[in-house]
Image (cartoon, rainbow, N blue to C red; front, side):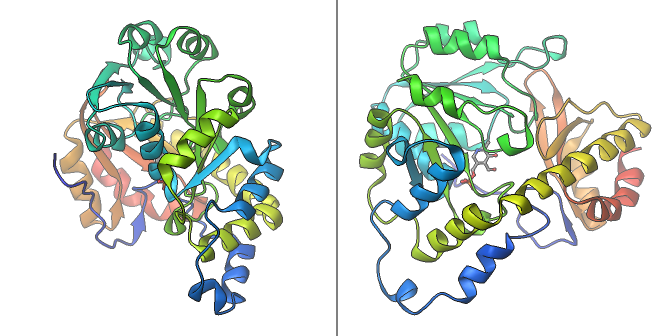
Length: 338
Ligand SMILES: Cc1ncc(COP(=O)(O)O)c(C=O)c1O
């Protein structure tokens, strides 16, 4: 396998990674400023118990239904290690989060991709084809990266009813959507809902992810995760944000949703046909996506290009942030995409 890479060269307007373009939560920054020496000199708690407490309060679940990790990448990796043996199958829709086939290879699993249903079916997952893979783990993502589209309730039900093993539902962007399946995960012994503080919560650099599921599932992931995965500073900052900055988060989400509507209208005026998005980014089919992304980068705007996506073709994934930031990118986008 290749080493995972993406273009991280600095650029004036970075719309490439779907992080919170407004920055980090103010209470988290205050907590960092007031951290004493022991936050740096001593080990954190084994399994980030205070973070679990704050997440449980926020989500309305119990602490024994939560496992945390060093970003949701780490939680996904730990879940695969906990529930699958080398040689087992990992089934997932295509396109989806680019790390999924990497995580399969890292764990010696056989990646099995199943194309999304087309535009006429709202880019829903092909639930029947996914369960037909009889995979040890089935990965779903809603809202899905890079399409921004949702898994329908009907398709999720079918997968939960008929999948051969664990079902992982990645909700990295769920704060921008209307419904989460966290409650469902508590009652369904095979569903693990994975989430992150990297996106709407504005703390990607701290690397904090978590999953919610039945206590047995969560405990298996915690064993495979091992201790000390969340640093003491990251835990302290995340707890401050979860306890004190809920209004800041909600406000940021509302702001992005309003900016996304304006941005979609702008793209349509250019004659483009973005996919319906339930996230803080839009997926825009364009010819020669890599060349267009390079031309945008030359003009100070970074977006994420994709070549030959199943059922879509070439496309750009463009993050949405506060409107003044988006406005700064419009001239370059008009010039390159018109
Ligand atoms: C769908 C999805 N899941 C998980 C992640 C990983 O997030 P993190 O490891 O920062 O929590 C990302 C990041 O882009 C993502 O898009």
